[in-house]
Amino acid sequence: MAANVVDPSVTAAPLALPERVPRHVAIIMDGNGRWAAARGLPRSEGHRQGTENLRTIIRAAVEFGVEILTIYAFSTENWGRPRREVRLLLKILEMVIDRELRELHSNGVQIRHIGELDGIPPGIQRKVIHACEYTRHNTRLILNVAFNYGGRDEIVHAVRRIVQDGIPSDSINEDLIASYLYTSGLPDPDLIIRTSGELRVSNFLIWQGSYSEYYATDTLWPDFNREQFLLALIDFSKRRRRFGLTAAQVEDDHDLSETLPS
Ligand code: FPP
Image 1 (cartoon, protein in one colour):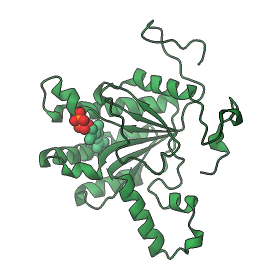
Image 2: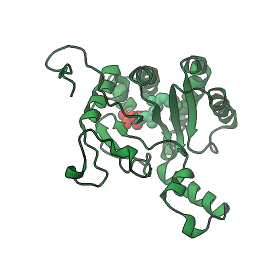
Image 3: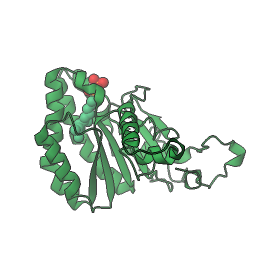
Image 4: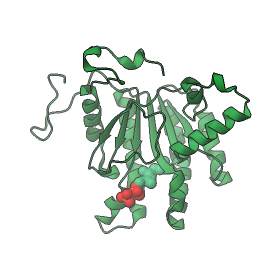
């Protein structure tokens, strides 16, 4: 830990950005419903506040130098929620594109969609495709929006396409499978954050997260602010990643992720 980093519960001194910032951070944004219920508000208000918070965290990711931010906005299982809530979450996706695209673009954010476009209403599909096209040359932050995303579903689709492409079985290895995933070409997440105290993976990046560091906080997503995000990055900077090796093999300042096969 850098000398000037202090526990915020002891003093209100500002936190310092650690030297080692994760390249790729993924977030399970959980707790919108409970945030609303705790205030006697409808769940929709929790999602609205959660969407506001997303702006804060995207800005913070740019500020902290995170290269890739992956957010879990809607899972393949979320279709089972009440119809009104599903409609609202689709509407939020559309609204975020309509209202935020220009600002995201001017801040150098490249939007990518991970998940199945099929199943999303055609008008919103078109907007998603447009947002990805419009921002494709931006390099400051890659924002992967996982919408209609499921980790198992992703692997099923990858296997289908491998078979359709006639890949011989002896050519199938981990790199090949990774190249058929939605995240093809991107490094695996270094850090996966889950808010709201739940300790589950929930079908999120189950292939890519094999050696990710996990960080769970009781804070509900709408309350997960810039400082909380920074605390997660500081926590990450203190982890010693071993990738299956022994502690003795892992030199303190050696970033193993650069030497291991992706
Ligand atoms: C989980 O909280 C949250 C979601 C399923 C939706 C996350 C969506 C946003 C934060 C808005 C941004 C969305 C887009 C499309 C960019 P929950 O509803 O499961 O909360 P609970 O567990 O407390 O009920």
